[in-house]
Amino acid sequence: MHELSIASSILETVRAEKERRSGTRVVKVGVRVGELAGVDPDALTFCFDSLVNGTDLAPLALEIEPRPRQHRCLRCALTFQVVDYEVSCPVCGAGETQLVSGDELELAYLEVEEP
Amino acid sequence: MTRVPLEKKVLSENDRIAAELRSMFQAHRILCLNFISSPGAGKTALLERTLEGLPRETRVATLTGDIQTDNDARRLAGYGFPVRQISSGGACHLDARMVQRALADWSLKEIDLLLIENVGNLVCPTSYDLGEAAKIVVLSAAEGDDKPLKYPATFYKASLLIINKIDLLPYVSFSLPTACENALRIHPGIEILEVSCTTGQGLDNWRQWLNDKRLATRAPANRP
Image 1 (cartoon, chains in turn yellow, orange):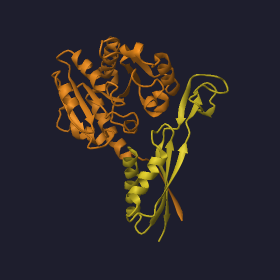
Image 2 (cartoon, rainbow over the protein chains, first blue to last red):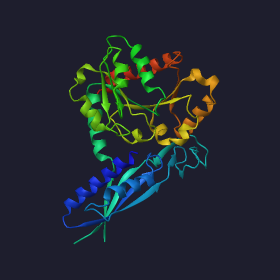
Image 3 (cartoon, rainbow over the protein chains, first blue to last red):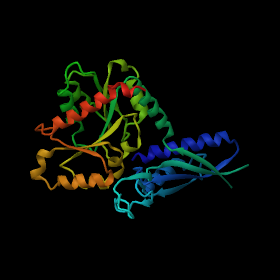
Image 4 (cartoon, rainbow over the protein chains, first blue to last red):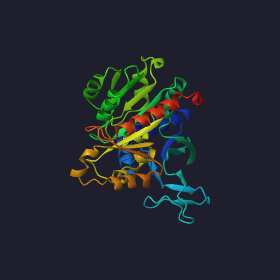
């Protein structure tokens, strides 16, 4: 259940941003979660809501953008989505491919209401 | 309503401390390894066999993480090298700050190998960089050979997979080729070693791996 500490890190950033822009209300925070990030979106949402409820940050929505695992072929440069753990290039068949996305755990944006 | 781009890592504070630790380890040419596994896969047993096989003069230190108890630290202290328990206080993983605190009063000049035994858990420790040179995942033959598929993040981020308890293979349904194939599907290029900490089988290969990494860390080309 490290989603609780991850939710808490997200809220630390939200709080810092809110203080930096005094007077603004943060209504939503957008987070990218890659399928290799080891973070469960449902558990993260549950922990996030539990931490927000009853605080001055409420109501605050969490929008999770799931990011599939994508590799790039080192031979033909094709970028493709890895399905069923198949990491070979679907076009040229090369086994040498490199992860380009899917391990993200990033704060993408905040939605704020200016005063 | 205004959308403000943030574009930062969620765990940027952990990553910042981990980067500090990593440059400190590099400056002191310390090889730091982060051992991750589910509970009971044999991390502590592997560390016991590792410490037992090291020459007395080896400058090795161990940090061992647990939610509760200092049982592991007591087991590991018997080999005469410095050991410190990190009680994660209920947390299911170690983070970089816990490591930084645990090292605060140790002289890094006296260490060239730092072994960190994470909390037994195949999920959460993966997200927290501890400044290590490599993550090592330990999987035992008493578990399922599909674990790499169930916990892809850990197997993806580990440089080395150690399959432990291979002495049990005749008695369990665990298929060694299937486990290796699954690990390679998640992480093509992951190194794999097969060992039994009970019989000692395969431990020479592990000691060789460790020795090679230590030599590479100390090599002048690796000077920061």
